[in-house]
Image (cartoon, rainbow, N blue to C red; front, side):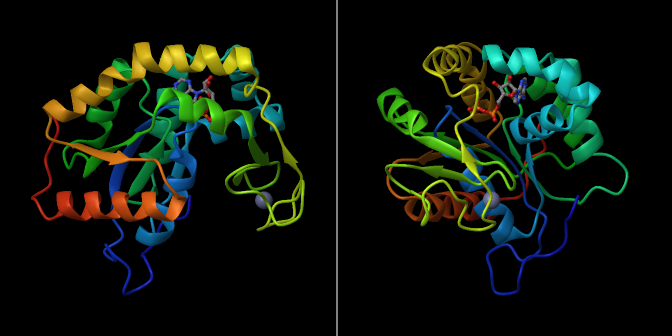
Length: 238
Ligand code: ADP
Ligand code: ZN
């Protein structure tokens, strides 16, 4: 996985940002993660993207994950944690990371606390957006089949219909962006993932961000929140 340093002059050019992103489905985690990674020069780890790639390639991991994903359920913790351990904390991994879609419940958060020790995390960015707004966003979400970039037919459509602006790949609607699977994922989010907001707040790591408005507006708030926290000494969770 590519690591490296941020272009000079960008915020956090030391290139070792270590953050997780929380936020409902449709809150813009993938978009903001991509932007943070470009700004800070750290790798983006999206567990959802990793599982979708595994399903496409027909690997054992893909076969394990597919059924859970189609039903909108969580892939078992041990499977997800193994993926994170190997890709984010394995030999040769870059020092920094933006985690998008992990952790998603308390046992994953506890596992991450162990993996990230002793340095810990710089923070947990919570992208706040209402249920009504995410339902609107998700039904018009489209994803590039080659590079994974996301578009919204209403708020950020591609320049050419059905084609990715950056790589020209075909855009498609995710299998789990059906009404039924969206509802299930949002329920699981409220029950299992939303409690992590309080968990990170207790550890002094929470960065709450209003995720409404344009992607640029949200990025500006995210970077301001990260910089404010990084002005403080790094908190060692646990
Ligand atoms: P969304 O945020 O819209 O649910 P993701 O791309 O983050 O989409 O995840 C898609 C699916 O991948 C999830 O519904 C789940 O089945 C699986 N998945 C992703 N991350 C995790 C995780 N940390 N733990 C368990 N399952 C996960
Ligand atoms: Zn693309």
